[in-house]
Image (cartoon, rainbow, N blue to C red; front, side, top):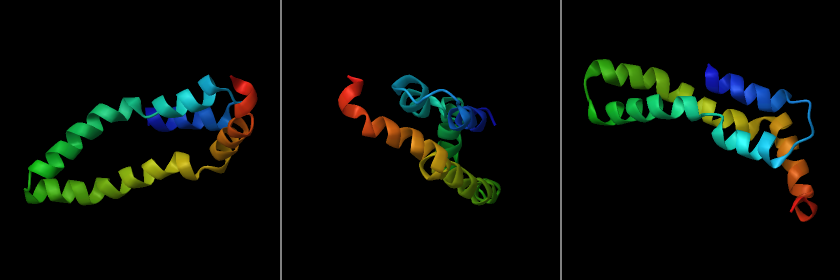
Length: 91
């Protein structure tokens, strides 16, 4: 929830895109999810119990879909594209 809210804040930011409010923000938006996700993935790969397999079947597709939200978001793409187009003048 926190990572999705951070992504939404980048997406809806009314300020012109900058390295800090777009690129750096994208690099860091999913930090709240990073540790729990690493623990989950470690457990799901090392614990072959039926319960853990069921949890993995439920959550792996959700996590994969979340991984695609930023790269496939047209508003975020537009922010990154604008920065890319200005790369020669940004320093």
